[in-house]
Length: 431
Image 1: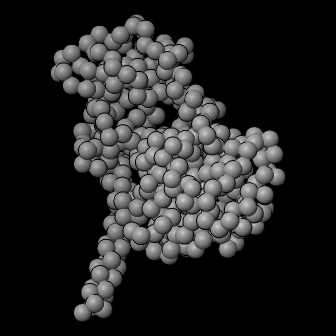
Image 2: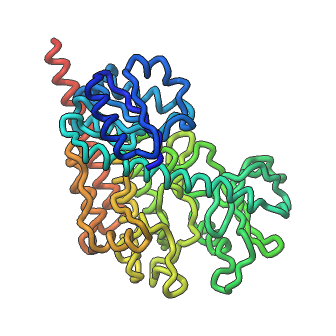
């Protein structure tokens, strides 16, 4: 492999052991090693231009809330360091709790040092480098696409400032409305659709959302067609979406709070007679108050008679978040959105998607046939809730968004109660 790997470990013998075995893996690349003091003096100048991956062996302790945990301190420090290479941690101690926190803080993997073998080390580094390569290719493609497909003809009444997003069918711009003087997210179709059933997708989204007015649902300001291209002017959320929030790590309490808020928003959507059908982190925005807002109702359909697609054989939505029945092209009901929310909950708790593969078909097959994903031991008290949202058969799932709200609220109350008891016990011990 052509990879540049930096190993950091205070133990010289172990450092050289890792260097030897990774040297076998990266024969066409470069494997360097530093002791911890050398790394401490140089880390601020280290960037991804120098190394593709940093393997950091460090002590983590057993308490993920310990402000003096050396490993977690380093992860917090390096997370804010611009263009620092991806980080794979080798824990000299630690447990499942610190593993979860390390991944939430941005580590690409967490390996217990006491269980590390040459095979496991090489496999973890190989997988980490592959994920990094895929992510870099996706980022490069996304960065290049808006420049290649810039808006040639401005939309009357809007001053476009920059591109903030793109999908297969549309580009989203940050724009200023000439009428109100406020910032909006201006969603513009890339070209005039060739097929009749593809026309006026934005019009359907505008009509769907015009019937639902709620603080947890995006507000549509304007709809129109300019030179054959549809556009929607919507609320702009400078804080960004849940996908970006996931990159910084989400604590259990926040994951449950976001889940309850999304379920409450789905209650409104479902009561309005709609299915979202494309619920995923990029379609969940955050207000400055940290409240969620659902966006992108381009695939929304009436609950009665809703089907997977407007055209037979066409896959709509993200494979990572599709329910089994949606993957199979069956008629859908509200429980399909609840399944998608369960996938989001798992991702918030673990920083990983439960199902992945080399193609969309592989991912969809796992939604249909793979075992239910299991949470790590520190989070296993939430397994029943997760199972109730991700059951393969919709008949075994929580039946409504209201029941999800109730279940999550119960989990939050139970968690808060446990925390209160722990605080009270700690106070009694000090007394």
